[in-house]
Image (cartoon, rainbow, N blue to C red; front, top):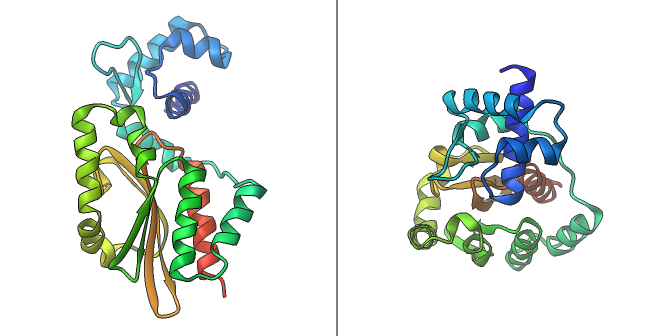
Length: 228
């Protein structure tokens, strides 16, 4: 992919992550002051659509990123740091590394990420919070999607039990068709070892989630848990 197409694709992805609104060529040029005409952007977007990186949802004039686009984005993901207030709240919540601390930390993570959080403590003891964050996402406002997300929550324990042993340790991203929780979601998770226990903590959100922020969040939690 040439540099101009890459810039346009990354701009579309970042804008869609922020707004959940399909992106048109004129709006892209105006908002981001791209040094090309809207006609050029239209042509590049047509190529990106032909290559399967963006798609037209229903009758909208704009385009949205596909799973292929997000996978490309993840290959070149930038680093993002948590701010000092966020770090402090997480460090305080996780100070004792006991079950009650994990629950406090999950609530703090839900507030910071704006997504749902699950924490599998000793594999079978599951806690989750922030489900309303999921249901407030524009993608999940349709009746069929509410049904899908509700089903996911009902099956969360079963899904975690099925994948737990096969997951590698450390922070990782599961996206779309490769996400065992739901093809409509993104997940940023970490599997950790603490003394004799193995646990799993993760962020669940729409595919249109802020992966830089959520990966930074999960890495920070992982590092606190495994530090001696």
